[in-house]
Length: 173
Image 1: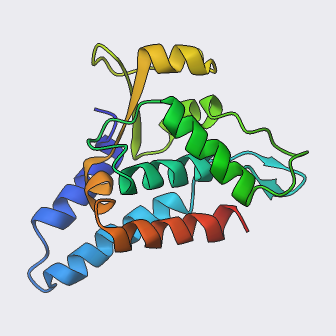
Image 2 (image 1 turned 90 degrees about the vertical axis):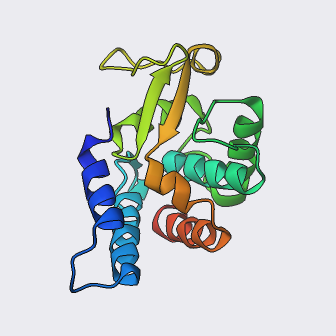
């Protein structure tokens, strides 16, 4: 499972808090881990500007969860998700000469993040293969899954708002 890097931290924190800490303190720690991961995404840069692609994709996923377009922890590269990505790109990316709005690139490269896994439609984990940058191929053959605790966290509006603001302030301002 590709979540070994983080799942132990989240599960330990959420299921067996240290005796000296309250459950609220434990949830705060899990939230801090989520925030730490989201503020340290591996992104390219161009002329000193961080590439906005992963942040825009995550905002699109968060929005899709809010609108109930994503109803389970299975993120498919649908036309609806791509349209949201393009809308958010226009909203947040002012200098269009530095970066191009291609959803396939961050969708694929997000697999380097500890909370995002890619699977083939047959359920097999995508391993270390040549990158797939074709939106059509990704739509047909691949889907993504978030780390379970992050997905559960995103079910609450206040959490979605908080993480959206964090992504905007970190990568899009």
